Length: 250
Image (cartoon, rainbow, N blue to C red; front, side, top):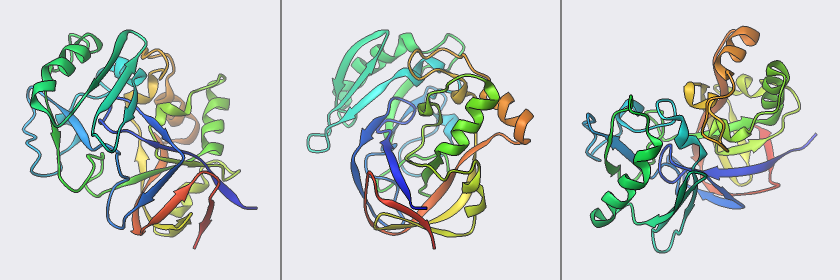
């Protein structure tokens, strides 16, 4: 059976919104264009944009669940980023422009709980997205695994909880976990599958409301003995991927 790409997502500002795509052109050794280009450093962060750093340096959904309900639109030509949220007015700003920073911080502040470290600045590492991995990864997600989690938790879950990049249906839950160490072709691109994605509290928040309403981590642990969902892959051969493209293990 031919497996096909059903969804492509990018997240221009790490932990601050997602955007659906119909196609994307990937480059070997790089993250998805427009994905996690920027990240919001918290007040205690040492991140200065000179190198990749771990996610604890940033404002993110695991600490601030309301961030999970943000939607994003990046204008690739102008660099303008538009964010939406059910509790906030729409905002359009340039993440690269220091003059826009305070306006963004004021917009975001009501979405951060008092227990979270305050956001301080937006950082970018030239040439790579600020993925959770120390290598430039793209997250591959299997609908069959998502359905298995829904069945175990006994209600529907938005797939946006997982903040993945490329979705397809392998028919069998967790079949993607058998891909570790193998190469997979999607459209014209080829990936080396490197790691399983260990999940955090961000996935417990509803992407429509930003409220924690599902214990995804407990469900994973009790039913499968792990907290993993989807896999991290690295692009080893670049090329275009479009909705409907074939997915096959090489």
